[in-house]
Amino acid sequence: MNRNEEVVIGVDIGTTSTKAVVFGEHGRVLSSHAVDYPIVQPHSSWAEQDPDVIFSAVVESVSTAIVKANVTSKQVKAIGFSAAMHSLIALDASGHPLTRCIIWADNRSVVQAERLLNELGGLDIYKRTGTPIHPMSPLPKLLWFKEKMPELLDKAYKFVSIKEYVLYRLYGQYVVDYSIASATGLFRLDTLDWDADVLRLLGITRAQLSNLVPTTHILRGMKKEWAERMALAPDVPVVVGASDGVLANIGVGAVLPGEAAITIGTSGAVRTISSVQKTDEKGRTFCYALTPHHWVVGGPTNNGGILLRWLRDEFGGQEREVAKKLGIDPYDLLTKYAERVPAGAEGLLFLPFLSGERAPYWNANARGTFFGISLHHKREHFIRAVMEGVCMSVFSVALAIRDVTGPLSEIRVSGGFAKSPFWRQMLADMMGKELLVPETHEASALGAAALALYALGEIPSLDTVKAWIRISSHHIPNEANTFIYSELFDMYLRLYERLKGEFDIIASFQRKYS
Ligand code: ADP
Image (cartoon, rainbow, N blue to C red; front, side):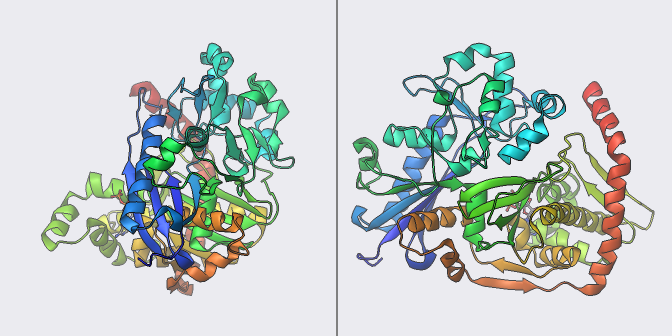
């Protein structure tokens, strides 16, 4: 490491781990360190984490990444923060947690979300706030508190997200960036302020929320104890940053209006950049803040790579054994089998809603369905149909986004699914669009670091990041397959509409008898 090179650190507080990445010039990764933590499930639909464990993970990941990069405090030009959206912690007046950190995966407020939508003007709230009405976000969770633990609403001095908690511990200040705020369901996109009607509905005051700041807001004067623990200068500029989703767009180079990023890991998301706020008449897409000129419009899907994992784990014993013998990844074997079958899996169609669905349907009762099964279908047909089902669900999200923002000009893909060239090509064929595969691994951390540099005036615009990212491959759609998929996709859409009522019935049957 060059002892004069200045570095910037991106810290990404994620759901399973916090990762700190030390970047040199042009986004070059010098070191990184991740610290994992568990999700606690005191009840089956709950999902919580210990905020102090996450705070310790932030401190440890930053200090270890700095040691690994072998840089001095003087070389650290700035730190930028990224964090998972939708987390909620109640704090007392001395800043101690009254609850654990309730995360996006917590579904305790299903009933409250339904009531918001059906009785409390949820669609209008969504149009003002950009956050779809869903148990993932703090709005229905706070309504749950109001109904189930009203004393907590009065007792809580502040309601904060995990990033606010970490920054409070480092600086003793309660600040929340517009980006994290815009994913709470409590924040108006047009005024960049808390929504007075929503606060009234919840029975909380603005004093119980943090001070709103732009994502480029700079904090200095870190508490000595923590600066020393991380070997940082207390006056190192720390840029509050944004949410992991919107920063991931920057980190893969999908920065200009119309450019889109598709990530398919365990779950998936499609996001594009818009220069103005945009919400959907039908409530299908989110709109989250990044900068005054960058709004991220997109949709999350529950059913991404988790479906191939489900196939591997539940039905792929044979493949797992063969793969072990050959010393290859079982996913590679599964996808090899799928390649033997033509597009459309010879008449086998799969609706992939094994975990219910968020965008575009926002239907927790949706379920998986194999349709068209015949005796000629073998395991490879089922594998291919599952992979195609994931692509169709992602495509349907992209179409909803297109309705809201206009055509998507360039699409960049990432996540575990992107390890498979075959699956990437399938998505290109499904969408009838060229896909680019950027060479980045820590997209949210890179986005956070780039935003920090932008905040300090070190780079003229976020577009600069594009030049830092190499494209490792392109996928041009195969026209013949695109033709087949357009018919398959029509069937998919129709089948969902026809089965919608049946999904409610089987979901309630499932609840009754399990
Ligand atoms: P895991 O499911 O084992 O936690 P990862 O986190 O690496 O795997 O990847 C997330 C998802 O990406 C997986 O569930 C799988 O669907 C997909 N994936 C990962 N590796 C491959 C691969 N080599 N081929 C196809 N899909 C893959």
